[in-house]
Amino acid sequence: MPVINHFIRGEEAAGTGTDTKPIYNPATGQITAELRLATPEDLGHTVAIAKAAAESWGDTSLSKRTNVLFKFRELVAAHVDELAALITAEHGKVLSDAKGEIGRGLEVIEYACGIPTLLKGDYSDQASTGIDVFSFREPIGVVAGITPFNFPVMVPLWMAPMAIATGNAFILKPSHRVPSAAMLLARLFQEAGLPDGVFQVLHGDREVVSGLLSHPDVDGISFVGSTPVAKHVLETATKHGKRVQALGGAKNHAIVLPDADLDNAADHLAAAAFGSAGQRCMAISVAVAVGDAADLLVKKVEERAVAVNVNNGTEPGAEMGPVISPESKEFIVKTISEAEKAGAAMVVDGRDLVVPGHEDGFWVGPTVIDHVKTEMSAYTEEIFGPVLVVVRVEDLEEGIRLINANPYGNGTAIFTSSGAAARKFQRSVDVGMIGINVPLPVPVAYYSFGGWKASLFGDKHIYGPEGVSFYTRGKVITSRWPEAEHASGASYNFPSN
Ligand code: NAD
Image (cartoon, rainbow, N blue to C red; front, side, top):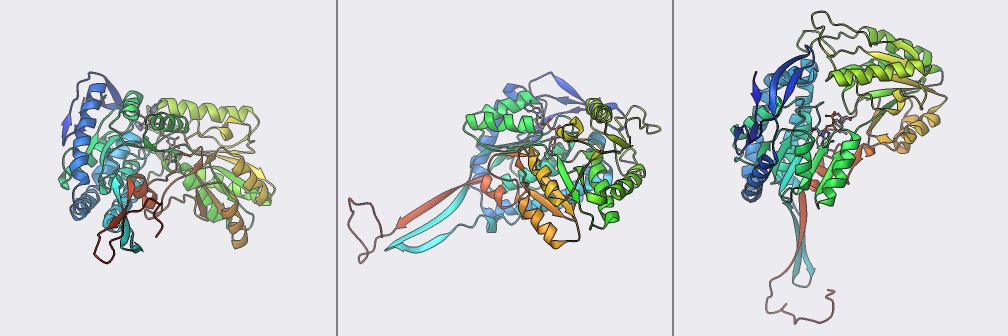
């Protein structure tokens, strides 16, 4: 059985512990490797290395840092197939989708390659007589990134290129379910010329996270995962004096107005609900059908849901893979059953799906549930599976009220042919990322990604300009170089000009 090690000071390391966790291929249900779990000693050792590495890396010129990022970008692009295979083997998403997430990660590396421009400060000549004022930003030091299972490459790449470009050392604690792609990223960073210790990988679950949240030499935490853990991470790490951004879960609504192109809306709803088996923080999980759009829309979504090709992600033509674990499958099936029992209408039922040749895999088929009420668990829970619930409303205003009453605020979308309706929607919803006839409005890398309310704890969104700001802190310098004609005497009054 292969064993997956940590990546410490530029090499694979077994660490001091003996505990391991099994790694599964969700399509086959088979154990494929054992993951080593870090001990508190491993954590202390890794943080000490990161602290020393941060000092010299933070002092490295912008052009040298940029060179490493350019090389890293080329290496990741050259290893897309290899990375995608690792993602599919441990997560289960289909290969084309795995390549898609790597593409979004590459965009962040490309943005980080522009770090010399992004870090340019301000300069005010002659702010006061003989005095100039200028500003620049410095790295914060050691940053830990704690990432979820559903994007084994993209989410680490939302963080690490930005943290490293800005001069920090980065410790990645990947999800214990999908550790292998992180190890390949570590080797590619090294091949790109990144000094040892600037990017390290430490495996484990909540114990390692707890250690990172409280370690005095960890200066910042970037977390992406479920809402209860995100909230815990923010509360714990800020108590220990750290800068924190903690992105949480979601329940993304797409509202469909009667004036929308319903075929287009149904295509996009099905793809956004069932792609990656619904295991995306930006997945559409609630369709809000307005007025008389509802019956036809549900019929069109049904046609698409039953046609989804569910198979092992390595099979040609597969459009949707398994869910991540037996526990996840059990939760999804239970939540569907609760909706049925509570009186919702089962339009497409994926509970009993069997994929021939993969009987031990963790499968749930595309599921569509109509006439869902807001008190049902299928509405209140983040199901994180291939389940689209349909809530019917009278008009746009009722749809907006529904969305704003939901505790999450990650993403939302509107399907309409009315510019006025779209504009009203974009200005009224309490959600961080909004799509207009775009179902998964994940911002491009030169904007920043982040939800509102229970979908993000902390002040800064991730990557883009807010990422630069999160991983650095500002200095403002007020400077005087006295010349004979400007030399002024010191004053006991507060200086004003
Ligand atoms: P998770 O919260 O279970 O785990 C995330 C990370 O936290 C993992 O590295 C895990 O090892 C660690 N962890 C888990 N429980 C912990 C605990 N009690 N204490 C400390 N650390 C703990 O999330 P997941 O199941 O891996 O990922 C799915 C979730 O992530 C969904 O809720 C999804 O919406 C969310 N997500 C959000 C975004 C976003 O951008 N907002 C992006 C991707 C995923």
